[in-house]
Image (tube, rainbow, N blue to C red; front, side, top):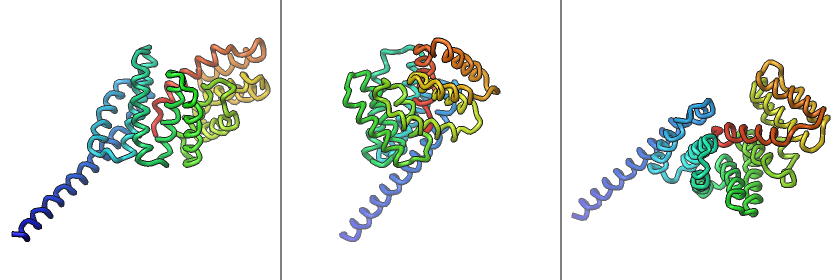
Length: 268
């Protein structure tokens, strides 16, 4: 009788392990399946955001201990946040931002050295610092972004999030050397592409705000003529710089558009 009970327990345990393995495998498949959605979202297909959320909520249900799944869910919720900002649905911003933070917090709890999760958490914490008037979160968010870059200095996402998060802070709170370093890295990573041209304009705006006209001119002129309307924008910026200066409202408008379209939904 005792031998029979041991055999039954063994079968039950083996079956449970098999089920766990299958669930983890299925979870990984769903994470992989959702990997292309941020790229589609940036191309204008906002309908993929809820699809990504549904897939990744199922992935984290099947494997709640996978930091990759929670990080991907954070990105998916950021897509929804981005869509809400674009659509002017301000009432949902705080709720969505809190979901994003919860996703990344779970990922960081599971893997404290997960660079993408740390960068995502640091970025959303900085946004929430403004929404909920919690100044201490600015410092924590910046520290997490810095650590994410230190963990993976050659990865795009931590650099992208740190640069765009920092540049949207008040000038007195920015770490200019880090921003310059990140944007230069991103320009190099983007090669001779349209995003690289736009990054030159972004960096030119930073220098223009600081009154560094020489450096601002250099960046505006570095935007290749072959990319329209980026070349036209750079030309407009250069003309304004040499006359009355680049309007602060124009700089803020460009940053807001780039942050919404690039940073919030950029693939990990």
